[in-house]
Length: 337
Image (cartoon, rainbow, N blue to C red):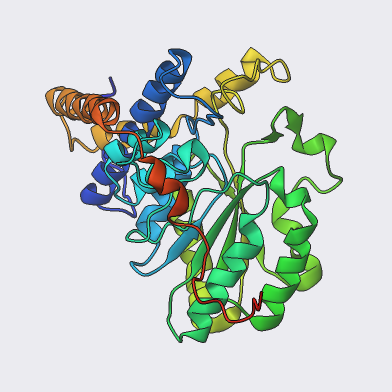
């Protein structure tokens, strides 16, 4: 474990670093547990783990304002955790239990929380991109200063709806930040095999949309970039595009054999592990001792174990729930027969 050295000047406080460490550690241990439970067939469906990408979730959570909204794709377990949701509600959703954050109706790819302004988790590739624009339109229409952080993967940027959305959001100057969680692979296909323009921050240039690339393994860089982009949108200047370059240490999903990348490549990115980076900074500053770190580890372990027990003990949704939370209008005026 790293020992205290001469302190370097930091742009963030002890409290921010400790929160980042606890948040990233919770995401990491939660996802590791999810992977093990999935292999034990405790729950089914698709399961996309966030291990390696946690700096993005921790960084956006510290950069956003209270009223801001977020919407993302199907690799979405960590986002509600970063927003402060207790992991037991995420775990229960994975189990399809009625106590889950989406009442057991969404599963791994559809985490929602109205209270935390998390507008999903979406399983259709790229579907959340125009929806993020719609959320931003509502914020502008209602005269708020809130922005919508709209996350997508590097594969989703190949959807045609992205360009329609970019054009509309720039035309109307909507308060939205488009964030590409670029882990370099759309399932097993690298960015370089799908595009002549590998700098994804340039995708909005034909619409005069500003953008930049960000080191997604650095929570500090992520925080600063998202804050800058959100401030730009919040001030009425329209959308901003961030190409946040990260890496997933596990496969695209639990069924991915990962034959498209080398062990050396994975090791290169594991040497940049955001969890280790944040912890090393904390130890170098002398903010925690070994015993403190062990206590935090134990507390996180207990929280994740509590979440598993909560999920396993929770009831399945009643059959009547098939007919609730659906789009319906009992006195819809335009159906005459």
